[in-house]
Length: 171
Image 1 (cartoon, rainbow, N blue to C red):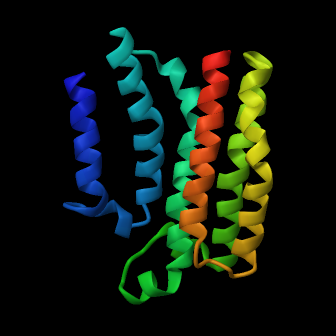
Image 2 (cartoon, rainbow, N blue to C red):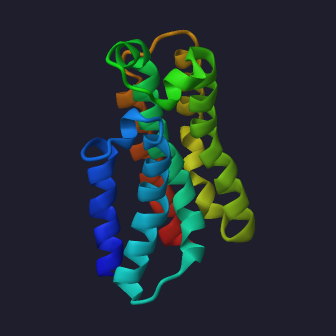
C-alpha cells in the first residue's frame, strides 16, 4: 500500500513539478494511469487488503472522463500554451484532431459502459442519460466554443460518476 501511495505522490510531482510531463505531451498518459489504474488499485487494496488488476476495467470510464477535462482545457488553451513553449498533446494534434480526440474521450466511456453492462448488470447503463451533454460538448469543441469546455466537462464527469456509482452499488 505504501508503494502505491508513493506512486501517487510521485505522479503528482512529475506532472507539473520536477520533470513536468504536462509540458512534454506526456501529461495525458500520466493522468490516465493515475486516475485510472493507480487510484482504483489503491482503493481496492485499501478496502480488501488484496491487489486485483481486474478492477481497472471499472475505472476506465471515469479515467477517460477525467482525461477529457484535461484535454479539453489543453485544447482550449492550445495557442497560449504554444506561445509559452509548452508541448501538449493538443498542440501536437492540432485543433481539429484535438477536438476529435476530445470527442473520443467523451464518447469512449459510454462504449465501455455497454461492454460492462453486457458482462455484469444493466444498471451500469444509468450514465447513458448524460450522453446528450457529451454530444453537445463535442459539437462545441468543433465549433470553437471552448470558453467553458473544461468546466462543463467536469460537470459531465460529476453527473456521469454519480450515476455510474449508483449503478455499481445497485448491481
